[in-house]
Image 1 (cartoon, helix red, strand yellow):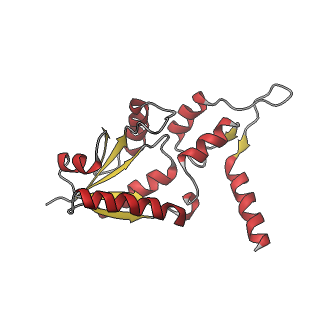
Image 2 (tube, helix red, strand yellow):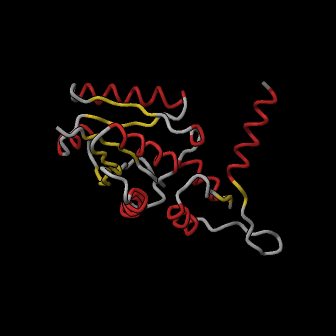
Length: 188
């Protein structure tokens, strides 16, 4: 019997951290369904169809991975896809409380559901879609945080900032993040 896992999320936009989790899950399970959630409480930058296109472009050629859209309860979606396994990414300790709450409620709704937590590569530990969008709005380059196709789509939403001379002026997002990390290490 094939083991199918579902990796749900808004993926607004999909980051290299998301892709790292997808690849890790792909090594553990026969089939991974990346489910793009329609979450009415979140105001998304990209439509569901745009997020599906992003993900499809990013996972094309990754064996056993497929992309789908979903709304409603996750436990109901799992039944329709003949799965009982949820994949969730944990970036930092701050994610843990929220993710445990979700895992607990999903288990209360269906006792057969198991949640598997995966950690991304350290390079992506503090990368979130929200942070990427925020720094992109201020003109920072996010090439190291996003796949190229996603970067192009995000750049259409948030063009690079302009310098006083009128030339486009990219700033490196990772250099900001690494400077902040160096300062924290010096203080410690």
